[in-house]
Figure 1 (cartoon, rainbow, N blue to C red):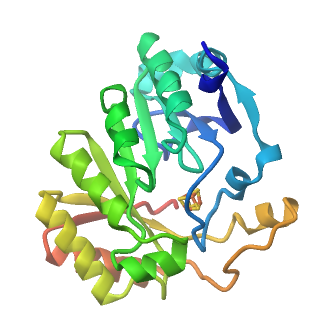
Figure 2 (figure 1 turned 90 degrees about the vertical axis):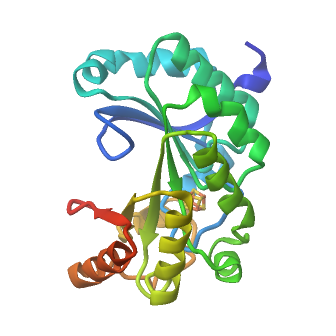
Length: 249
Ligand code: SF4
């Protein structure tokens, strides 16, 4: 294995139940091209928060919970940051996981070159794909980049037959307006997608910024109330998109 295939890992979390099917071990890789106003993983931007690990060492650690994966239908999830940003390491990690028969999930913002997405297609069982805002300029204001490449990659995955679970972080006053929800529903129905997940914004991560000596970009954001969650889900359902909102999030 060449050093260029070493992964920069800032966390490995065992027994995750929100990162794909079953019980999972989630590997967090450093680096992200976006800077979302509500980012809950600021460690992904701080280079001394990560350590270099070979794919073999990561998978050896993940395999400790192989028995839990077997009974629950779980496996390894690769998250970030943006795990598809550095292609050689993530591809080597996914290939190593597959060599050991692990179910694999990748959580992505889609803000990477399409070649990176296409290059891991055969190694990923499920993509969890975040769509943060449908308006290109609002997307830029909220994350630092427009969304054209993201929407192209979402389309690519669906057209290539990948299993994709789309998710939208629901942030009141940011992306829960009628216009955005309407555009989201139109995008999904255009692709033949009928289910997605709304992930309610929460504020629990703010103390991470403080402990890293960073300032959160938007401390004023509030979680959606139960009625705001219901309204957003109902709006999507009107256009035939069943939006799941996890009551435990
Ligand atoms: S894509 Fe994810 S990791 Fe990157 S800035 Fe946005 S929320 Fe943070």
